[in-house]
Length: 283
Image (tube, rainbow, N blue to C red; front, side):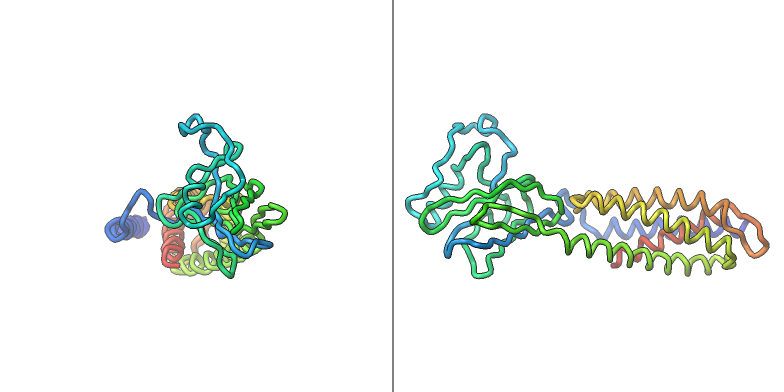
């Protein structure tokens, strides 16, 4: 029992130092972390055009502008006239989305690919202004991914989000994380000198499978979650997992003598999950 208490004190000391280092070396800002973004590919487009995003987060009355639709025609097309047109644009509640940082609209390029970052609307539309001054408005799209990859067909106006590669990559990442978790926490299990009996092996595999799959399913189903919010969710999820696994190991794991040692099982959960969290942070 004295050894278990000593291990618990050591663990809390290490944890305190680890998080103390994180607080000291990582600058905390209100806008820290990844930002939502839209990577747009334009197909079947005119030879030359301008492209921007539209949003509808506020009504004309709330914005203090006249509720009058803009003409879908620009007489003189150049950088200055396009900027003025976009800033005053309104079409059935949709208006120009201007980001506080970075470019808000682009001139066409050979690849037909454009990146909108820092702050993007959801839902959104895309506006295309060609060299003849004709204005094309896309369908509306509700962004599902935090960093979305979208395609606009100018001829049909269809705007789609390409998610297949992201979903496939997410599934692969879940599998890899599960394997890494088993490897790391399995090493810690040996360091705690738990024998690899059928009971211990089943308990280890069962609870790790339940907690990892539950967390993975939650993150997959909440694809728009990202940035600093995702870090908070993972932090509290890790605490919940430690408590669940700690309670489980405290009554299920048996030492070499066949006895259940409650404190040792709970401390093992703390150390094993901290090791996994540190590895995840490094990666």
